[in-house]
Amino acid sequence: MKTYCFKLYKAKRNQKLHRQINAAGLIYNHCIVLHKRYYRLFGKFLNLYRLQKHLPKLKKLAKYGYLKEIGSQAVQDITQRIDRAYKLFFHNLKHKIHAAPPSFRKVSKYKSYTLKQAGWKLSEENTIEIAKEKYRYCKSRDIDGQIKTITVKRDALGDIYLYLACETTENKVLVRTGKSVGFDFGLKKFLNSSDEKDIISPLFFREKRKVQIIGQGQDWN
Image (cartoon, rainbow, N blue to C red; front, side, top):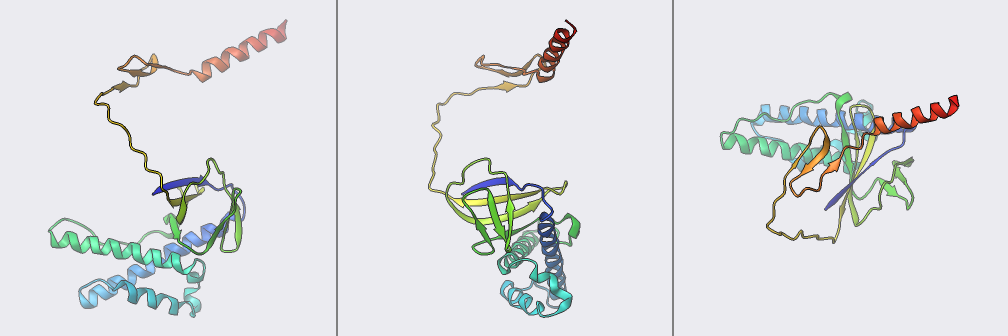
């Protein structure tokens, strides 16, 4: 498996993706409520498939309209993520390992949702279609392999990225030579290597400053 990361160009239409990520956060918190209520009543976590059957019924209610913001597969991925977290929690309890159950998250700080086979379409150029809306991204490299999942993720600055998890046939094996090498970041040199292949500091500011001074001297003449 190989994952590619591409940044979306900033555009007004990106607000729709922000709303979808917020909706994913609301769905996550609602599932946590159901799990906590079920655990309080029966002393065990809620079955994954029962939860997945329950959520589509809520779409008919205006109160839960945010469930329509993202595709059904993205909703299923959220429930699967919570299910894995609860299984890990109970496993740790069984083995007397200190752990805390999955908790609520701030919707504004919720980061991502994942699409699987449906809900997206990738063009040959740097364009992707999500929920019938096209977005352009910075395609810094070609995509190799079959795309399995696409994760829409935002960072703390509000920028949105695409994470493409691809299955490839590539299998690179690094040959072990038995040799070792050491590196150290220095003040006079950017990188000192034990095999004496040092890298000199680029000093971009100093070089740029010299060019500007020379240019100003020519103007005076």
